[in-house]
Length: 212
Image (cartoon, rainbow, N blue to C red; front, side, top):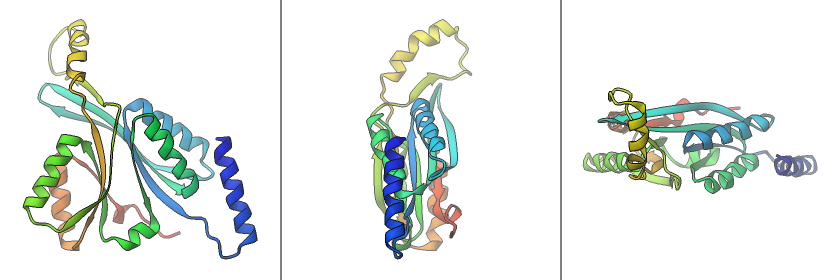
């Protein structure tokens, strides 16, 4: 956190010497396993003078007899501090996307999707087949894999579930985060419907962004 403070002090010096200088703020979404997101949440709390946590989600996707578990968090604040989250996230194997306010003004109907890679691929394929104009602006994937467990609905002794877990985790489920831009307003609802029906978590920036 010392490095954060040094960067912010340098930025404050620029503000005091340049009346036209404005502190930039941005949003980031970080996704990965629970330990990574715990670490990023703690970092954000320590930096709460410069950034704030907008929300955090713990997701359990049920696929047959398996539960795929991951976490993600959305943070907003000083872009210099926010950018420091990127290196730490990547180093820890997480997925990271960053969205600036200018970025939002340049692109229509910006949304973030978070889901396992195979689910994202299926969703993008369905959107493409529906001939809805959109584009992918950013994409980031985890390099450390998310947790896969046998569902609690499966009635097996715990020691057997524990013995089987390494075989399921060998599937190496990759988590993907993408930023998409939808060209026409009337297509936003359709894309959200396709994504949510495929169990993709959707963040629509029209519900997030407020003027300061």
